[in-house]
Amino acid sequence: MNTSPSQQQQQSADDLQKKLIRDEEWLKDLKDCLGKSENIRGNICSILDNFQDRIGRLNETIAPLHEKTSVIQRKQQNVKKLMTIIDASIQFFGKSMELENTVRDGSPSHLDDFLEKMESLKEAMSFFKTHQTYASKKENMQQTFESGCSCLETEFGSLIKSETQVVDPIKIIECLDEDYEILSFRLTNLKTIKNVEKLNKIAKWMLKNGNISTIREKYANYRSENIQKTLKMIVDQQSGSLTPAQRQTRAAFLKLAIKKATGRSGDKVGEAGDVQKDATINSALLLLSAFLILSQLETDVCTAIFEDVSEVANVFRETIAKPLRNVLEKCTIILEQYEGSFAGMLLMAKFSIRNSNQLHTLSTNVDCEQLYVTFNQQVFRKSSQLISDFIDKLSNDHSRFVPEDGNVHQITSNTIKFLNILAKNRPTVNQILEITVTGGKSTAAHFFGNIFFSLF
Image (tube, rainbow, N blue to C red; front, side, top):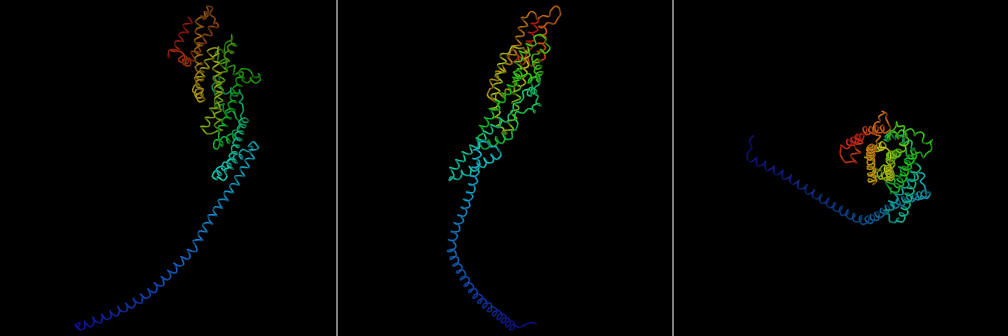
């Protein structure tokens, strides 16, 4: 249905009127909201101003109280620290007094308790070191600590004496074969010390907390004396200065060893004289081999007591130094004065060659390398000299020829035995001659040629 233009205009006017009414209502509502917003804003500003005033008054009230509280808290903390210091001081003073009483008694009978008190005293010294107020007390504790260390050193010396034992010489000799080489499996039965537990505790504590040089010196001195005492007893056992009852169990072995050393186990004529001469070599060999046994045992004892590798090396070096020097000096003198047979010296030369590395290392460690070199040179010099003396004697002895009656005379028998010894021990003889005589590898052959030439 179509409307006329007038109707359309009337409708547009109505719409505008309605819109105008709505806008007026909206503006009225907006004015009301603005009024309410203004009231709210005023209330909020009033509240904020009031809150700001309260904060100011609170700050004026609380700030001084906070400062007073902080001061009180610091004082409380200081009081707690002071109480802790006082409590620790009382405890440390008490432990110090206990240790002073123990030290005054002279001997730490209960070692574990003594070491525990020493440890506590060390802690007390560290504690008082940080508090200058107790400087004088720290000095007193330092003196007590040093006295405690002296007690431990004295106790260590007493223990090393009471626990050390001298090994029966016969048991040491039983650890040697007929060539004076060590039978290692028998060393497990040899003990030169009874118990190392207390010694180990003292040594470990002193190594960690004190000066170990004193107990090292005490150990080295007494154990060195023990080695020398044992070596002397072995020489006495061999030389016959002990009673027959004490020597009886080992007499057969020594006799066999001496006979084998001389190479004349089957001789009838002049046997007693040869045994008497070569007993000196037997004595030297016993000294050397027994020393090697005792040094090996001493290594085990040092390790068990001191544990620390560097300290074990230092203690062992100080312990064996004097015994080794004495052994090398005595053996060198024995060789210089030796007038026996080459067979006896051959046994010594073989022993020296087999054990040269060990003896040289030990000698170098104790600063007596030159003494070992002198001894070693004397071994080969004397061996070479005895070979030369035999050849000279053979060349100048007119009875060296085989008699026309066909019997084997003594001189002939000795010559054959001497040649047999040289032949059986040609590598050793070769080493002896190469060291002492110029001529290189042909030296041994040269000497054999001289011997055969002297026979004809």
